[in-house]
Length: 187
Image (tube, rainbow, N blue to C red):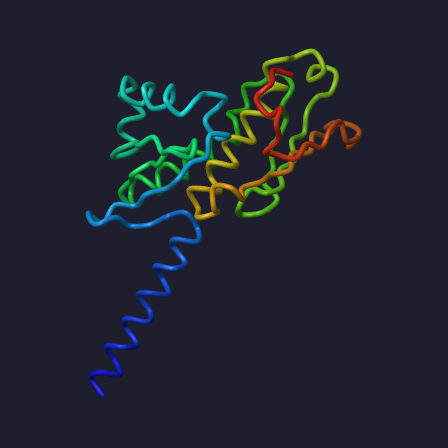
């Protein structure tokens, strides 16, 4: 009977390991969580530039334990469980913006993984505000993608659709699917 319990435990551990490998997160030998971040979530930076930015940014260093550049044009973040929780919460909150914008009225996440996001804007102000157009598209997509990868979505499978709507008329101004080849352009 004891052997059956041990076998059940081994099978359960293997199942969890397979799931963690599938989702791009794995605990290393030190018990830290490793998360692979694709280059398309580095804000248009190369992996080397991102890595060197990490080395000089004290605030970012508090969010992760280590950063490694991978051969396949990605980076690996090494985090404690607490760091992972905080990083995910930051990505979720940053995407909500702070309400101090001329044209952005409201950001709504339509599901828990941020795969569909609606942004209500004052269209007359939005059309002439390059900074806030970029925030509503490229920056918000990067936050959503990073949140998804930190939540266990494989790095090559993250995606989000951002719908921009006029707050007064409910008219759809744009619908953009990310990632895309043009995601870090300035609008």
